[in-house]
Length: 136
Ligand SMILES: [Cu+2]
Image (cartoon, rainbow, N blue to C red; front, side):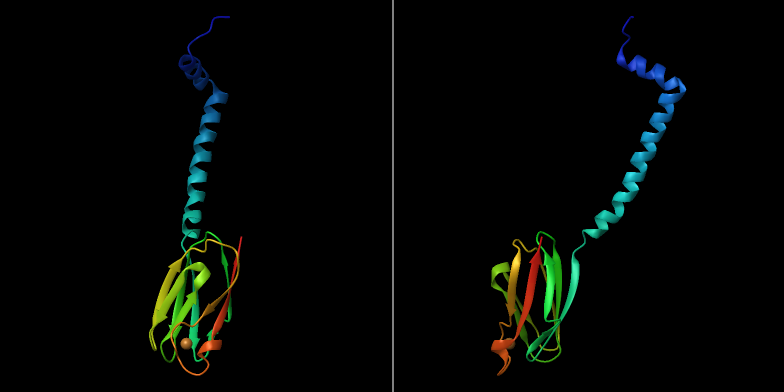
C-alpha cells in the first residue's frame, strides 16, 4: 500500500461521505459550544449583595461568599454614617449618612469572619456586626 500525503488523504476522505459528515458534526459542535460559553461569561459578573446599615445592625446579618469569586457589596445607610470592615479580607468601607457605597473585592480565604462598623455611630456602635461566611 502506498502512503499518500496526509492532506491528500484527508481531501480524498472529505469527498467521500462519512468524513464530510464528521467535519459537519465538528463544525456544529464548535458552534454549539461557542453559543453555550456566552452565558458562562455572564455568570462571571460579580454577584451583588445589598446590605442595609442602620443603628446598630446590618440587614441581612449574615452573608455567604465564595473564595476566589468577585463580589460587589452594595452598602446602604438609612440613617447616620457607618463603616464596614472585615480585617481578614482587607475590606474597609465608609458608608455615607443616608447614602450608599459599593465595595468590590474577591475573598482570598475561606472561613467565618465578622464585619464590624468602623465609623462611630452611637452607643451601640461596638456591637454592630455582620457574619461573613466564605466557602469554597
Ligand atoms: Cu458604627
